[in-house]
Image 1 (cartoon, one colour):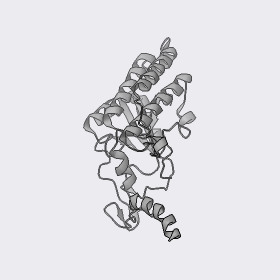
Image 2 (image 1 turned 180 degrees about the vertical axis):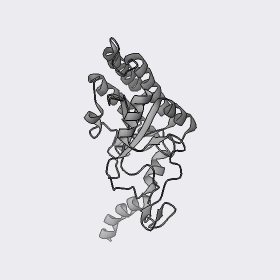
Image 3 (image 1 turned 120 degrees about the vertical axis):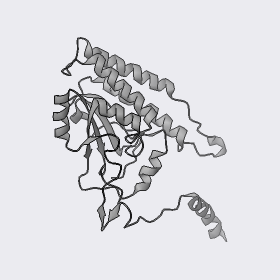
Image 4 (image 1 turned 90 degrees about the vertical axis):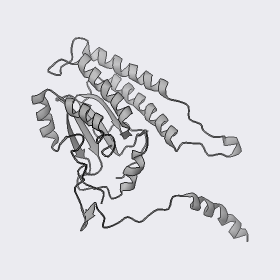
Length: 181
Length: 79
């Protein structure tokens, strides 16, 4: 994320204008010793690894959205636009729910869950009968995985509009279990 | 002969795997076993290093907060 998405000029501008950004090393003292994983992940459209997670929250720590793993600037921009729409339509200036704000929060997350489900293209699985290995590793498979994952996150947040950062900070959903811990 | 025939598929699979390169102990990112600052830090997204400070700042500026939770240090190079 840091070398592609957070370094992208347009992404950085959009984030810096509307957000105060902070980072937390969830394993203090641990430092990644292998840059190959970062380089490998950065070449994809998305890779929903458990390794890192981006949360968008109100100043009183209510979660608007989150997603784990790497998302290329174009995909990141779509989710960021979603967060901004959600913030505008659901919350007032003091970050309290507007009238029907919590209902709208649920609707918007449900709409986006459905939209991501529609975007998911079937992945070629290979011909098992002839002994071919299913194609679960590659750009299309990772995009499939990322979109399916985003749909699940939206659906889960739609179930609880009052999710706090602490509720998901260590127990967030992830698209694949790859981690460097 | 029979043993060689049994080992052949395993050798072919091993040959298709990416070779694992040994990690460098010393490189641009690591000097004396210590991770060096990452040169791209704060050149794109601006980071507030303390989470509490970020939330205080967001309240004051009426902004939202983006929290990036990771395994490792965002401000350091690989080591």
